[in-house]
Image (cartoon, rainbow, N blue to C red; front, side, top):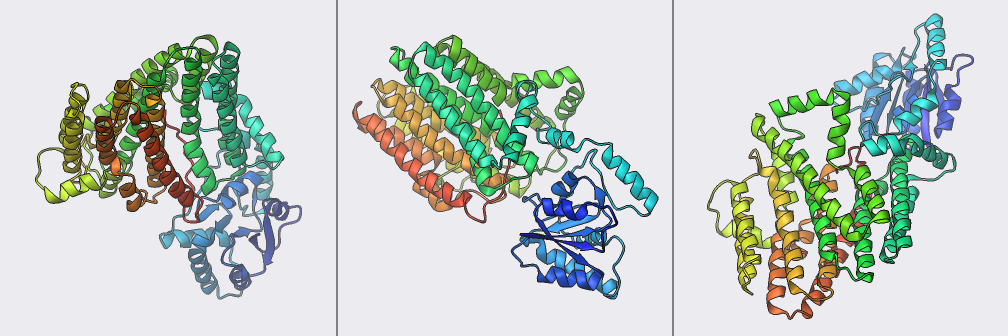
Length: 594
């Protein structure tokens, strides 16, 4: 149980003790700084502890935001400061300093705020949540206290809490058609003790049932699938809103939230393909193409953000124009809609599934995503070319990890350290050779092309990726690897090849998403042994071309299936081990990519 140390006796009529207890704190009262330090030392080191001014006046949700968010080792609001075990040592030092300054005999005024000042002076990172209209203050006199209580009464705390449960920046469909009621569903879940992870799991199960309905291939099944896909999205919004409403963040929730959206969408693609096959229409190539395009879009987002989030002199005329457009109401919504974010995309897929055919659904999806990808990538290229930014070593390292080069490319870089040109140009040249070889019609040409591509991949990462457009290398590698699997499976022209390719790309894509979220949590890339074990992107590309060349048409799907299962088992076991471990970061994405 968490412990809150009140510095002094609460004023008559104050609800501070009840508020703290309702938030899960065991309340102790200190008469002076010496007793406060003694009480702090008595709290077990593995528990959260807070120091709160007994004169605090404010909303309970302000205290909740400041004292219970599990993502931050140290946090504070006016009149209160808290530390989790990771921040305990810093809080103890600050408390000792204040006790020493006061001689240990009298309770210093505004002790909690003074501790925060001491933490800042020590260079500690103290999180201060945005309170908006919520009140959190320590009145200096009775009149100020009366005014503060009036300010508390004037604000509808529950309305503020519900509003803050919704992302501040979201898509048009989500903002206007889902969040107006999903926030109340989140509150309903919170009042019944449901957790975000349970809602996330319910969303996944709903999407899988939707995929199963689509796989029936009947009109009734397609209609049910569309309805259930929207229901799954409602629950998908609800889990994040529940986490923000009740501040129930966790490492397991981070992993589930980061991966289940993709699992749901790609499982639904597979369901549509199965349903179409029941009606005699083979759309597996379209389903795989949609997954490849969507994953590459995400890698563009991730790579660009990682390349620029800590860049210095991070300005450009294009960025200034974008900021100006965001200041005009209607352009904000248009720009958010044309990138086809998850809400708009799932709504479109659901409606098209219900009223058209899987083939039409995939055609529209591919055209829409292609346009969105072109729009966003072009804008980012312009920003990169016009900004005067110096990228950091951390950014270059993140791009190298996202590139996912394996032992073959690393060996090439070691034995042939010559600099053949700019990294992006080398990567483009290698990818072009691979693409030409795939369409050459010669059996062993793709193997030679994949070998040249592996050489280029090693050369491309010989130097740190700090060029203006080097962030394009990871999505280029994703397109090369996934595209190779798609093209060779389609050329095999045998039953089972494309579904097996779909499974292989899904397994590898999971590995790449897992890499992204580890980097976002400052936990680094997956361990080197895993990258070596699954071959790296260039090794898998070369292996698939060799399998296509040496195996018969009937053997190729079997080999792809075995490879897919092996990759999936390795990456899932390691991913689960990492994300459920105590050291995994509590990453919750507040800006879901398209």
